[in-house]
Every structure is written in structure tokens, then in C-alpha cells.
Length: 234
View (cartoon, helix red, strand yellow):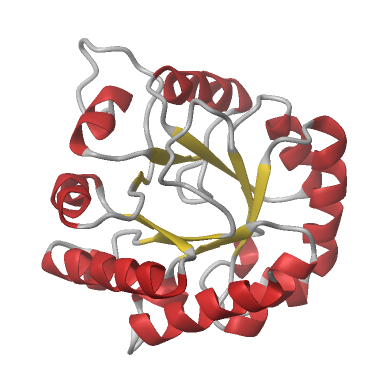
């Protein structure tokens, strides 16, 4: 990871996107973050939490794991009602941010500007993309991490590492030609430890997950399975 990023973030990593699920909101978000922390401490695998904006401060003050914002805008301080100022999530305790999630798409020029604002605030940038060619274009913008997620598989329980392994392997190969320093993650449909292991075998350094953890009956147990799969691959 570049020196400008948080020393809390290491690889392999499980980054949990809480989205706006009821199971990842308010008190439930705090409980989920504590489950993430428990697994991280027990396995020594980095587990990051990406809660809603209103939960960042409470969670960041309660756990030792890295906390990410789900989005930031490239605006400066001023008259931008309803936008998310990078400085605000940094002040709340976030060490990084997701950018361009499939549910919060941006133009390439906006991605570039947002990465720059994240870098100004020493926030770890995790840019989402949906295929190899878009990933290569994003890699040229030099974010810290890139998460490849075919939108059609998100929330289906069908892992991209199995349904479309060529998307992952092709992305890794193409991105490495453009930017050898970027950390590549795999997302969409990751629900089991074997999915995590498959993603790592394809050349990634971790996974971006959401419903597979947040909506699980026992998030701790699933996270533990993920982390142990990562340790076994190591």
C-alpha cells in the first residue's frame, strides 16, 4: 500500500459494505462492526467496515479495525448541500472510502477528481469497476485499491470468481500492465470461504462483500470462514 494510506489497512482484506440494510444500520451497524473486529483480532486478517455516513463516527470510536466511507464527493468546503465532503468522513474517523460503487456510479472524470480528493485527505481509495477494460482505465488514475464487481452478480449469491472467473483473471492481467502497485479486490456474490479462496487464487488480494455478511444469520461465523480461507491461501 502507498505510504500516504492508513497503516490500519493491510492485505489480504475482507471489506464489508453495510449498504443501507436494516441489519447494517444504527445499533445493528455497531454490533456488526464489533463482529468484524472480533474476527480480525482472532485471525490477524484485516477486516474493514463500510457503514452509512451517520454511523461512521460511532463505529470508528468503538473498534480498532479500518472504517471506510461508502462514498465521497470531489467537492471542496462550501455551498454543496447534500454532498459528502472528504474532510468530514476523515474527521469522523474513516481511513478510506469506496468510490464508484455500482449503486453510486460516477463518470471517469469524476472518479479521477474523487481519487485526488481522497489522496489529499490521506483516505485509502477503493474504486469499484465492472469489467477488465474499465478497471484498466481506473488503474491509470492510481487509486489505492480496485474492486471488480459485475453488477449483474451483486446480491445473487453467485460469486464472480466462479460464474465469471475470466472477468477476475482478465482484470488482474490487464490492470497489472497499467499499474503494478494497485491492490485488486473481487466482489459480487461472495458468500462462502471457498469463494474467497477462489478469488485469491485468481490473483486478487481480498474481497468486497455486502449481503453475504450483513444479511447472514450469523455474520461472525461467515466472516470467520472468510478469514480462515484467506489464512489458508497464504
